[in-house]
Image (tube, rainbow, N blue to C red; front, side, top):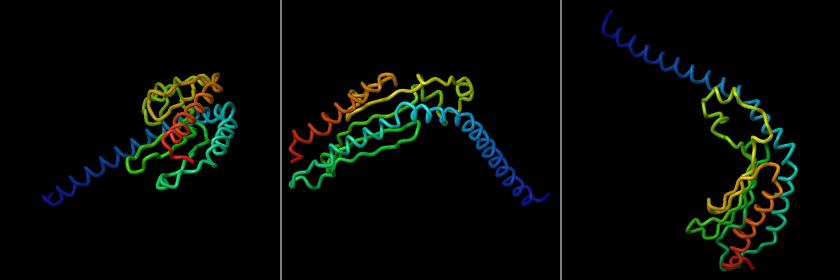
Length: 188
């Protein structure tokens, strides 16, 4: 065998090993995602059962109370309040943001999010098949996280206490967005 043939074989072997490794990783990811799918579907069912209607109503409520807020003329370079949401199963959320000082990138926010309590054990990205296989399908695996501009405002609520979570979210909205904007003279 000539040196050129040996080099060709060496390059081909390396490429084949890489392809085999990539294929093994792809198959392992598919296996994990297949195992995770029932958990994800269960999370979607829990969201629909306990929160879906409420989240839609909450979003409408906050849109209603932000649509008439007028930014003062001398602060028109500011963005208006934005309400973003995702309404489908795990990771559903409503986020309300007000960019107060665009040049300094100062943003005030309030957010409510539906999550799995133990995201590490059920994450698609975890690669821990043992914890995914041992998963117990319980409504109590899920919770709501309500957070404001600062992490110190973040609180976790059990689904059975969702009304308290909604109240806290509303309080943060008033404090972090409305009162902040009014105190600093951003709103008319």
